[in-house]
Picture (cartoon, one colour):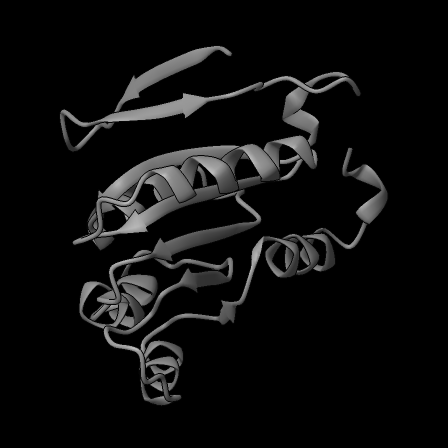
Length: 166
C-alpha cells in the first residue's frame, strides 16, 4: 500500500492518500476525481479510509482530507481541484448539522459547482427523523447518501459514462 502526503496551502495539515492511486486501465488522471472528508468535529477515520478504498477500487481518484475537516479546508481543497466530480462528507458522531452549518454560504462564496454528498450517522440518539436531513439539504448539501453503493451509483450518474469506472 502506498502512502502520499501533501501540505495544504492554508494549513500545516497533511492530506493523506492511502491505497492504490493507480489503476489497471492506465493514467489515473483520466478518471473522475472526488474530495472526501469527515465532518469537522468527527475523528472517525476508519470508515473514511474504507470508503476511499472502495471508490478507488471502482476507478475514482480520491483526494482524502481525512477526519475533523472544517468547511474552510473543504473549500480550499475545492479551489485547488475545481474539476472534481463531487465533494463527499462523512459523519459518524451525529453532529453533521452543526459541523456543516454555513455550508451553503461557503458554496456560494467559493463558487462550488459540484454536488456535495453527505452520509453516515447524521444525528445523535437512536430516534431518527428527517429534521437533520432537511437542515442539511437546506444548508447546501445536494443529497444524503445511504451507503457506499448508493454513493457510487450517484457518482456514476454524474460522470454520465459508467463504463469509465474500473
